[in-house]
Image (cartoon, rainbow, N blue to C red; front, side, top):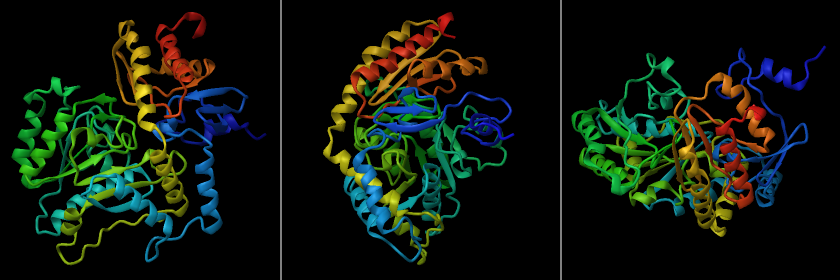
Length: 432
């Protein structure tokens, strides 16, 4: 007899960071609209995750739907090798217009991890083509996360990250401590001291620094100050090292500015974008670089960047991304994010006093409750179901329960998310 859908899924389908041996409850979604997901059993839940930080305008947006429908009438896909199309050209124009002026060239790819892979290739090839093949290593920060492919894994924290089992087969890069300064007023020279020592000692072999600006996301949702970024930019300039900023999670308004690097008033040499690029509709990412980087890659007279995803610059994805950026340009997203930030500060900060809570922090449209101890398997057996039963969708991990809601969320819905977190922290017996 055929298994029902839930059992079939549990037996045969891998989900992100999951095991087929120890089953955690999952929920089938049948439709989504606004900030709500409708489950197969008819329940609705408020999505506090924006589908892993991507659906900034919510679900089933009529303009985004129409952009895909219109493009589908022309073509769903065409190879990008030797061909081009208007959706890619239009999107490239928009991205160049809204990013820092020196960023003038774009490589489209399929996912954030691949955008990071391309950035690393760009940096290494930049130096190789100029007769400096020894500049192959990366300098990055502890507690960072840059993706799950091998090049990206190599610049994730090798000890505290999720890829420690692979560290013997990954390239060996350089890791500085994560900064502790939350605001510029907190900044001290000790925050940058070890980073400065590493770049001073190893700059002859460092192709680039790579880091997540202001917010280290899946590595622990740590926030740090703009001054640290300014110091990093200056040191990269002093020691002739490229700066790669991975804004895949922080881009398109999540921290309160269009891009997090704007808060430090700096420009990277290479910039990785993704997640919210299409408003959560399709997978698409982009790696931008300066003319200087592009010229360096071409210094050997070839300039061929050796990467080419099959679905590179997919027309459907480019079309919906272009419309997503148009909606951002016309909306009041800055005020929406500021309102979300203010409300989360009011409603989450009291949880600092709760037993078992180590810290509560808010930045832009990101709210984090950090626990003293990681959520173990016994808690994860009941906590996701608890959230769903209370009418919200949250996806905690490690020691973190966090919110990254769509920008369109209404105050009452956001209050429901923050309130349920408080109930979960209290863990009343009749709810577990």
